[in-house]
Structures are given as C-alpha cells and as structure tokens.
Image 1 (cartoon, rainbow, N blue to C red):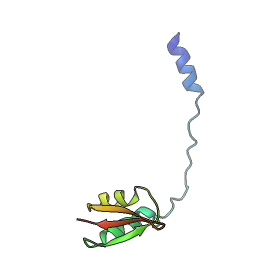
Image 2 (spheres, one colour):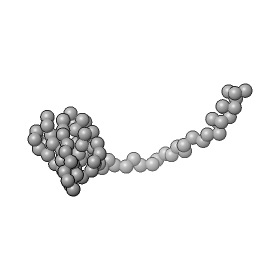
Image 3 (tube, rainbow, N blue to C red):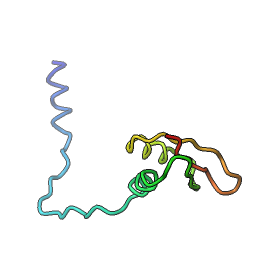
Length: 84
C-alpha cells in the first residue's frame, strides 16, 4: 500500500513545459570574462582596484591558472595584484 500512495503523489507532479524554436541568446561579455581577460593581461606585480568584495577575482585567476593577492583599499574596494 505504501508504494502505491507514493506513486500517486509523483503522478500528480507536473513536469516543466518543453518549448521548441526558442532562440538561444548570444554570449555577451560577462563580469567573469572581463575579469579573466584583465588578469591574463597583467604582468607579475601589476594591480587593479576591484569595487566589490566577492570571489570573482579569485575564480577568474584560478580559471587562468594565475595566482593573485588582494588587499582592502579604503573607500575604493579591493586591490588585486598578480603574484605569479
């Protein structure tokens, strides 16, 4: 009896509607790609100021295989240095 009641509950769940002929949006320049391009163009010792306190610089650097360091800059955000 227990398995039949479970089946009834799952049968009541409606799947997501499937749509066809919906165009795929073109890829734009995202914050991630801008960050990755910036970090790849840096030489060791170069830096820039990033206005937010999140993990975007670290994720972009990891994606590019580059090591960075950060330090808080009063009123400006975070300074990001390429160290390797």
